[in-house]
Length: 340
Image (cartoon, rainbow, N blue to C red; front, side, top):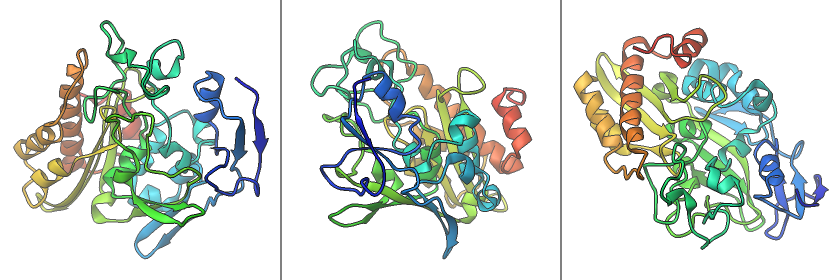
């Protein structure tokens, strides 16, 4: 880690020439230790950002400084946003959830080993240097099959952002040139030719609030995560789903995939297949096919396409038949005790 200067509020007021911002620090500190990021000034935002959680006009407004643990345990989230609770619980260890902020969690960086180890070439870390993840014999278990480009195939690693995108969330930002609202699905950029530019945030722009609609479909949702081990691991494939049902007919739905995209991957194509239709097994499987129709798996990741389809279909069928799992069932499912 290279030397740096630490500042605290009020010196952390957003400005285009300002420092690198640290909230909970659970991602930034790791990358600084690895010398992947080497900022000369770091502004600690603890105490500067709002931690409030409140319902306003049918939406849940969450301060960006709220911790993952606090949001997961909030009564409104428990009762009306189960997929958000599940994603937060399954995202990390209790220690990390008690430190990491929800604003910072949306901006976490990829776990691609070729990005996180400086001896490898990585266009995301050093623009134009190349992508060793695409070389023969590379480890591609943490790579994407949706939204990839010739410059980058690294996947987005987070869980909460997948549920946030699925449910139609938005973020409110603060910036000297003007605040704005950004849809969750527009926050992260596809890599294309500039994989080092990961979001649409301007220099010095901070996330100030997260806004989640409290819809009927959001109240009947869950986040299903498949990983190599049962705890403290990133998703090989995941699905954040919500269904509003009128009998066996889907009135509205929310669908997004994790572990397989270069960004949190909401699927309007899959939602369109289900909306207004009976939630039959055949219709659900057709939705799963639609969600992965544009997949372009790098060599060695083809299995993730099948895995993502089956994860999404399983999540939708389970939700249709039994509703959101309670905490005990959720943990049993994640430990493999109820998977057929």
